[in-house]
Image (cartoon, rainbow, N blue to C red; front, top):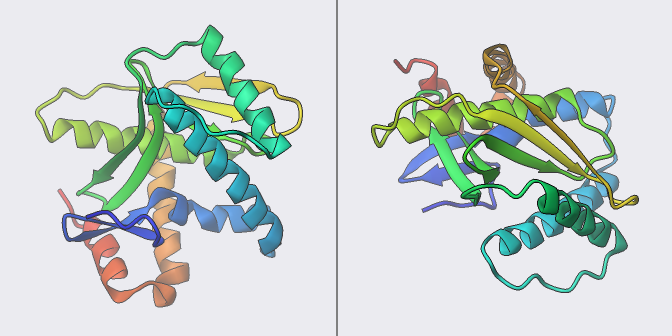
Amino acid sequence: MVDRQKPYYIIEGKVYARVTRILSIIRDIEYEGNPDPLLMDEAAAVGTKVHKIIERNLKGLTSPSVGDPRVHSCWKAYQDWKRTREPLLPQSEVLVWSDKHMVAATIDLIDTECVTDFKTSSRLLLRHWLQVNANAAIYNEWKQRDGNLYLPYKCRLLRLDKTLAMYEEEVKPFSEPLWETFLKVKEVYIDILGEELLEGELEAIQGGEHGD
């Protein structure tokens, strides 16, 4: 069972930290340690709507009507991108997890070449690259559970502009240093937020550091 409402995943009775939850400590630094909760909630709501519309589109379902002009702008930008970059064998909203590191993520889009993350922010940031590289590393480990060979997936960030209806696409090779940096951030995350984490979550995350 997967509980998507909590700051962690519960998968097959085990607790896994969310990649985005771990990277939230970097987000707070970007906002100078004092993010405006109203602005963050509003931005998150737009991003959630955009992700849901794209997911329905990738699954061949009818997309809901778009009332919010910011969501409409992102949707138009995505349609323009898709016309020129039709993904091959796409899978959307794929839940993956690492038993070695006890972290999990829901990947926006996976095709035959790239692990992709959609962004509706005003610009692409370092933590976005940390996120998509972490997602790729976790996906590769997850795939090996079924005996698949390691595939060094490329990492794609696709930014959909909320006002200009334009997209910004960047594709880079998977970066082992960025993955290692994410794991360091995870250690800081435990140190800073340890007391606030549920006991089971902290135990599970720390236990992952002793994996093989």
